[in-house]
Length: 490
Image: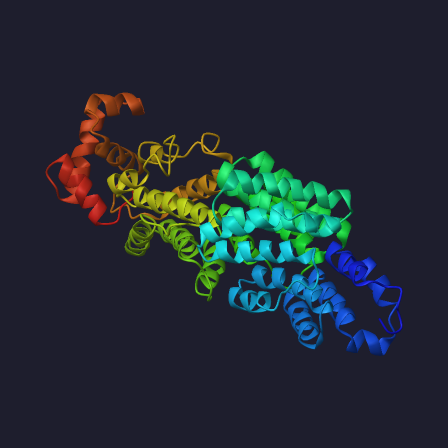
């Protein structure tokens, strides 16, 4: 290779794909400055370095240039570096185009290309094709010539299985890939494998402890590799977990780390950050700030329908906090309609967002006087233990009773309910009369209401009469309906 004849293509590829900035810099130093800028492999190294450092778009541009100016066998190694980045940015057409240029010039990369094709096929919904390609890739012994290639194939078939929603296989392959990478010191790649395990734990098994473990492993592995971008991804994952769990201490600690090292957003990180920030502002009662944060994100291009639904459900919640009943109901009804059905297959993260969106929208309905609609929406599929449906009969949710990854949302609903009580119109009713009015929809007798509030039946009867007079109605059903029509909090 001109000024560095002792450096083999296999060595350059191994260094580039292990993902260590220090190793890449050391290898680049072997080349004269002119060669670093002109030759294909050094350009590819610079592309990998850029992507590792957080500039994925710049890395792709450099690798595209390297591929365009390279000849086989160099070109095959460069394509294998480029395509995973194209897949990570959802450029499937670009990935297909690059893969069409692969051939048998480098034997060990043939199964690697098959594994990449399996990922693309799975993302396009061609499950049978993906499954067949993955089987051929794993069974091809030519990959064993280079341990890094064998590990990358495991990682790719894990990703393909994830997109096919074959989660047990994805989990098994990703864990094997992570261990293989750690054995050869390819920590950046191990971080990517842990990211697959994180998604499965967070959105499929819904185990908060395992989810946190994989997010931490992702962060640690990428830190060892010096991959700022993937390290940020791991921190954002931890940030989102802490927010969903309502863990203030961890949330503040991770937020400080993220703010200390700001960088361009990659890997779809922004959604997790926006949700976490909105939850934090909402807990503190800063609903205007929380609303502005989530509204700007919802209006951006590239959002999936479940993501938009989750944003809309939070906006409905903030409407309820201000007691804008019309807006809250409109948004909540829209979300319930959107979340009743889903794409098939539905990505794990979209299923997670859709479930949360429906739970929040149903809770909003309960908060603004549409308890029956809200409870109907909280079917066993969305609220299996009825932890959120109890909002129709209890003043607050028990945050300890909801799933751990939903406690941050339950906390926000409780804060919003308190705000709604303060902001709902009273129409001249005293606090005691409002308390009695809220007890009327449950169908309790005057004796039961009296016992609940520790008052006499005569006192409750007098307060009910005052409620009827002020609302200009003649019976309980009319009082409840009149209060709801007027947007009063029940």
